[in-house]
Every structure is written in C-alpha cells, then in structure tokens.
Length: 335
Image (cartoon, rainbow, N blue to C red; front, side):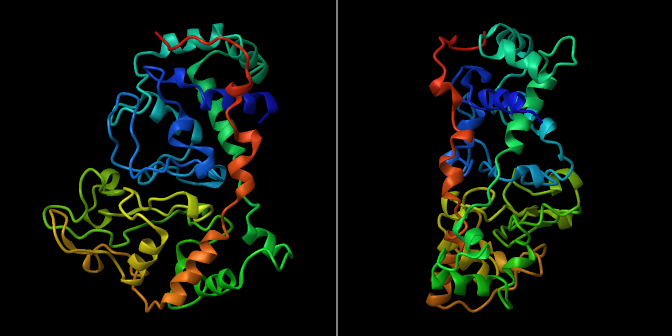
C-alpha cells in the first residue's frame, strides 16, 4: 500500500478508456453514491450485453475472503480485477486482445506515466497488466465503511439512531429471526470468516433440471454438486438501504420485499416459467425457516437497516472521480 498506488488505482477505476469503446469504467457498475453498487437489477457491459447478475458492493471488500456471488475459488482482488477487464462470458469492459494497446495508453498518458514508476519503484518495467490490476485492487482496499449512525450509536452517541432502529436491532440479533446467523460480524456478512459459506435462500424452486434459472446456478457452476444449486455468497448489509434492488439477480425490488421473503421462508412465484414455492426448495438453507412478522416488526427492521447507511462514505472525496479535477486532454479510447 502507498498513497501513490492508491491514487493510481483510483484514476484507473474511473477511466472509461479501460473499456473497448471508452463507454464504461469500473465505476459505472460500482457507483460511490450507491455504496459502490450500480442500482440496476443486472449490469450491462461496454458492448451492451446484459449480464445475469447485479454488481456487488465494493465496500469493505478488503476483508472479504471470497469476492463474487458464486465463485468460491476467486479470493484475490488482483485476480478478480482481471475478470471485468478481459472476461468474455459475459463481456464487461471487453479488453481481451487489447492488452498491448492498454499498456501503450498508461505508458504515454500524462497522468499515468509518472504514477506507475513511483507506485512500483523496484520494477524495471512498471507498465504491466499485473501492476494495473494491483493498483486498482489497492484503491478498492481503501473503500471502508464504518461511520454509519449504527456505528456512532455503539460508540456512545445514544441519539444516533431512532427507537425504531434500536428495536429492529434487537429483532435482528434474536430468535426466531436469526438474521445475524448469516449477516454477522462487523460487516454484517459471513464472508469475512476464514471459511465463508454460501446459502440457498429459497428464492426460486422452478421445475426442470435446476431449481434456479440458468446461468445463475450458484456455486454449482464450480462444484457440479446437485446440492449446491442456488447457493450464493452473503452480501454485506452495510449501506443496504441504497444498494437495491436485492439478491444476486436483482429480482427483489425493496427492503420490505426482502424482509417478507425471509419471513415466508422462501419466495413463492405463482405463475410464469419460474413458478414454484421457494420454501420447498430441497437445497434451501435450514436457517431460512420463516417467522411471524407484524407490520411493526417490518418497519423496525427497515429502520435498523437504514441506520447502516454511511453517508460520509457516499460523498467522501477520497473515493470520488479524480478525472473531474484533472485538467488534461485525454484520448477518446484505446485503439
């Protein structure tokens, strides 16, 4: 870690020239004002290809032991950065085959040219794809959230959150709700543990060869074990009020609907090709057992979840687009 490397990574994170047609950057799918999510049910790549999943939050990603919705083996931020840059299934930034042009850009750009040698002083040639990925990962590790009203409340400011939020916290950490079983720890997730878990929450129970719609089959895509269909990573609940829509495919529109899903022990879809009773999914996690939920309970849950929003993070200039203040002329794209 160094201040220069963080700055370099920040410039790269916001640079649309890192896409095949200069239309998308990392920041387009991870927007600061939405806690580094996108705000859409699923993402769209630089070429217009619709993806099958929503963009996960990058907040506190430095502490995550797994980094995507369903790849249990992808545990390095430096490795993960290469997926949106060069991946083809789906196409995100679409830079496969453009590696040489990408390195020419950073070597000759008036911003990048001096930052790479200072960031990697021991390397004879610092202008490499590996170092580009390292710089972006370094910036991502600085995106930390811990200044929410909830945090201030537990640091002694007893007026930081409402009475409704306080009641919601009690519900969250109590039986029979059991929310904390999967959303535990400082980040309200279970992927900061050394052995992260993946869960089928009964979102679908469709007929056919798989109970979840392809290609979103959970970690089954990697394990090929039938019992792993529909098992996905637990996302953080920090800033959850601004990161909707929810679930891996953005199919749950609101926090209230997400709470109702868990209260029912799984979602029931009554019509269409995905019709089925999610609570009866054979792979569903036993922790998703359902519970009685009053209107007051629901409102208190929403108030508690809202108290996890870190407004300072959403506007912190350290994470903002540095190109807005850089008075240089930039080429339109990598050719």
